[in-house]
Image 1 (cartoon, rainbow, N blue to C red):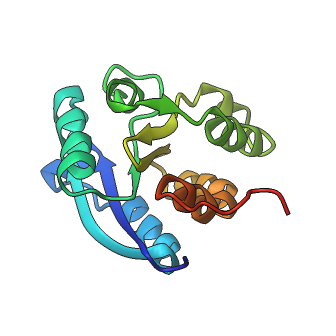
Image 2 (image 1 turned 135 degrees about the horizontal axis):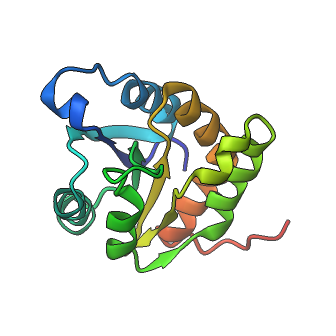
Length: 164
């Protein structure tokens, strides 16, 4: 099923939304997932819970995007609200993805334990929160990349057995 999915990349950044910071992380993520399908939506919006919620709901419910990657807003500051917004729209979480990203990152930096990133499903769409830093976004996506295609295929109704 390679190359058959629709993808959205949503960057959460007050400075990026104002145009005072270039979005490197969003560009990197788009390049990294291009082999999975087409990036049909890319947007930079401020760190605002209601705006994040409405964007995620629109991209899933109306645009039927298969995979949404968010970058930014997963830390501890008052403006880091991506996990709260994501939790509001998810039908269920995929805790193994968030745990795997934190475990891999923890091998590189003790700051990884401060990440509040979530991964989960709304309807038939997967939503994954990634760090805002280009390095962190790349490294965390690399961790879950081996499971993405299989997970997305299952969400889309692939009836084949998971066991080999």
